[in-house]
Image 1 (tube, rainbow, N blue to C red):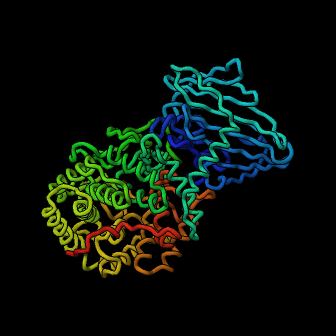
Image 2: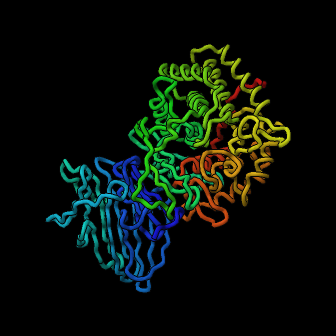
Image 3: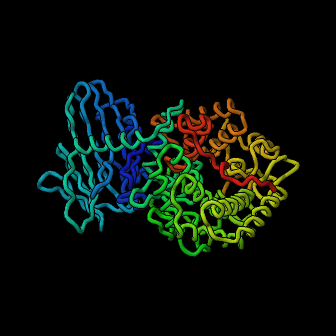
Amino acid sequence: MQRDIGDHALIGDLETAALVSRDARIDWLCWPNFGSPACFASLLGDSENGHWTIRPTAECRFTRQYRDGTLILETTCRTHHGAVKLVDFMPVRGRHSDVVRLVTGVRGTVRMKTELLLRFDYGRTIPWVTELRDGSIRIISGPDLVVLRSSVPLRTRKGNIYGEFTVHAGKTVAFALTYGVSYSELPAAIDHKRALRETEAYWQKWIGRQTFTGEYAAAIRRSLVTLKALSYRPTGGMVAAPTMSLPEQIGGTRNWDYRYCWLRDATFTLLALMNAGYFEEAKAWRDWLVRAAAGSPDQVQIMYGIHGERHLLEWEVAWLKGFKNSRPVRVGNAASEQLQLDVYGEVADAMLHAHMSGMRPHKPDLDMLSAMTHHLSHIWQLPDRGIWEIRGRSKQFTYSKVMAWVAFDRAIKNAECFGLVGNVRIWRKIRDQIHQEVCRKGWNRELGSFTQSYGSKHLDASLLLLPIVGFLPPSDPRIVGTVEAIQKHLMRDGLLLRYDTGGSDDGLPQGEGAFLACTFWLVTVLSEMGRSEEAREKFEALLALRNDVGLLAEEYDPHRRRQLGNFPQALSHIALVNAALELTKGGSRGHTRRSDVHQKERA
């Protein structure tokens, strides 16, 4: 039986991550990195597609929590005969990647069972399993090798691993699953006690760098740990989520692979990290961004793989039934080939914020930005697929044009302050032209609001970002009207839809949940408009939607009260951090807004 999306917690080693259900079953893991094929895939199939269960043989109650400030998950299982604590974690990666599971007796005596099914290639391939003389178990499939070591005897049958054992109060049973490659020597055994100490010390030292002390400090801390867990340490990239094809509507087809790094998230991510004091991580993300986007400006993509890979071919996994029969299950993402003009603005905005925060500009970075701005000067008038990556026909999306304005605006500022070389006179002319065009063609007098695309009557929550990026001030009547219209027409039970999928031609069947980041954007805008009480009320309602360990998916179904979409979602947690900092004005640190750097001239 598949567990709900929001029933899961996250563990990871800064190169990949696993999802652990509320009843302590690992349902998802891609090894050796975020972009690898899953070897535990029951999240998108059934038990035969790979899982790892450890639980009492008798009926029990489960409660869980993270150790404060860490990614170490503690699940307590209580039965009539006693209680045990299951500690799940992945040590920060050294030479090899490990999943460690420790079962410690808390009270009485508890009979336990474990079942481990590794299924490589997204739950399809049954590995060759061999019991070794030292009691460890070797699992091989092609290039993949995994070694299971345990302090209790286990048995194997048809590629599966089973065991039953008893845990007494004060005693610990240890399991360690280690990934290697089949053409090399077996990975060495891990010292689980030392690994636990070092993992806890790493996370507590990392979160200790965060100095925010405001009323939402705990929520910010958990979101920051989550964002760090979604970062790929070797390159600095951050995946949108560690999962793929979790549906935006149960039974629907809006199922996408999010194990990639989006340029669009750049400025949101940089500000969240820098405002929280994590300049090292912000610099790593900036450097990833520059490497990934480097090259001919007409070949810039909206997303890349964790190493900067460009080829993200989309295909369907026919043998997986999908989450609650939501098909198709997709690997790869064809949106990587779309024209989305807003990413040029995101890159320019991110670069300017990086430079203004003290990250030294380098000539190759500035040259790349200059070339991108020059290229945008020739294509900004084209229709595109927009921020929501529609699969229908291209349109003149209002938000895309606004972000083209941002691209020129930030390029001008980079030229004035940091030596960016380019035709600033032409850039100013285009910037002002775009501003005038958006105010004329993107505005609907009848609705009293900006609209999703030129000449349309459809609303879009991305328009909440207009004051946030500095296109117009929050007090402008057009912004006030847009915010009111979005709240009136896109709000469902206090949460915002991205847009009305039933009224917009996006090339897909209608229906999806409320998009959590959009509602966080509303919180930010309301706060900037001086409507602090309303903003705070909405923010705290959003916090209440997090699961029991503080995690958020991409979307939420307010009617059935469940999380939807890929999980946990970086953008949701980034928006949470930025909204919290806006509400509290950065706590003791102060904070930077995106609109702080925009030009003062108004068209």
